[in-house]
Image (cartoon, rainbow, N blue to C red; front, side, top):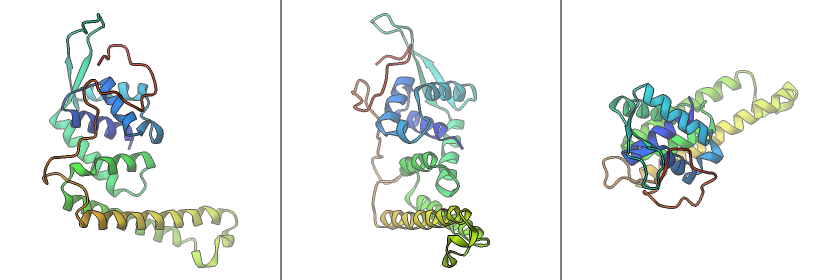
Length: 213
């Protein structure tokens, strides 16, 4: 799974309607340009591609008063919302996801009901345990990595990573069960996007042609 699809769909959904520069600003505001492939070119490409696929609906707005070209705003479609939640659920449960996909999923987990988020995270732990067991069919941690030469160090890393992820996930579940955060259906949802005209303190570059505030 590519994190960019989940990130862009989630950002557009939070806005209702958003143009490319807003989506780019939100992803930079979340730090996604540091921990994912959410670079300007990939963001604009994803918007256009998902519009062609029917996941986003395009709206062309009037040119700016400064004489700039019209900009395109995007709105998530019903099919796009279904794809968004499919990606989100898959990213929360699958242990083999890359760090950027996992980070995006945690960033959007509040869009789910609390009980469902906990259930998905518990499924994630079961996946971690199954993967760990598969590694241990070839590697016995108690005997040390030297048993397999330097390749054993790789498997040792895998085991420690799996244990750390499982421990972290259990902690997250405990915090959610303890009432942390506001999930879907519990009140005013958390919206971590920049408002129209709001300065982005983490902006990294120039605007894309056709995108104006």
